[in-house]
Image 1 (cartoon, helix red, strand yellow):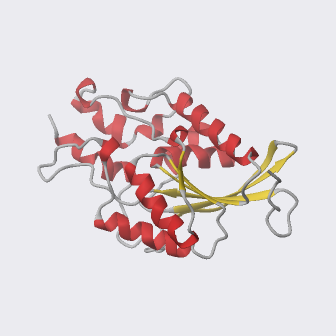
Image 2 (tube, helix red, strand yellow):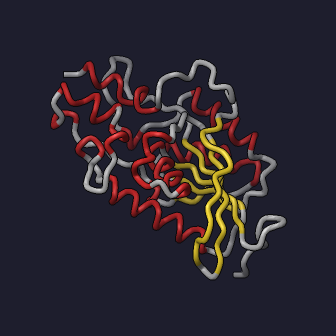
Amino acid sequence: MSLFPPLEGTVARRRLYLLRHGHVAYYDADGKPLNPKLAALTDRGREEARTAGALLAGAPLDRVLCSGLARTRQTAELVAAPHGLPVEDIPDFLEIRAGRLSEVPKERREAAYVYGFEAAAEDGRFAGGDGFAAVRDRVVSAIEALVRQPDWTHLALVAHDGVNRMLLSWACGAGLSALSAFEQDYGCINIIDIDVTADRVVRRLIRAVNLTPGNPAKIGLHRSSLEEAFGPLLALD
């Protein structure tokens, strides 16, 4: 398969549209946590995905990928629809997982879950769960393998909050220390251009971060993604 032509005016540049899935409900009506593996888009999430898809309808996408979980696939299908493209599952982009709530003392839950990315380190774990470095290595290896594949110039990847933070930190070269700074709202779009020469990534350019198509001014979006996702846990016994 021949290499697609690079982005216009460049020698070897490709464009990655990196999205976070739309809004999901992680808790039931009584405030009890649901299995995050099964979480599906809410009405709000479907609208966020449709809006992201409308914004990218004019982009000449060659491929649309997701992590394989329902919330990323449902988002990716709405992004892919205007292009008539299939959605590919890439499990290497699955989200970083927190540990069991019962194993984290109540007084440490806010630091571990809500502000867990602030403690990201090579030997650290997210809320007692997955190791930051192991997830970083998995995600970066997957994206570097993707950009070496010769069958695309424009690619959309729908992934997760933590995964997107890992990829943005890789793109700017800051490493794990930057995870807490790259906020990722539901349904957001990031744009990263990547130069690949002689099968090697030589340059990464961040064009846009955490763009929310339906609310570009972020009106009413004041809580962080982790505050929204894990805040209710603090009240549980």
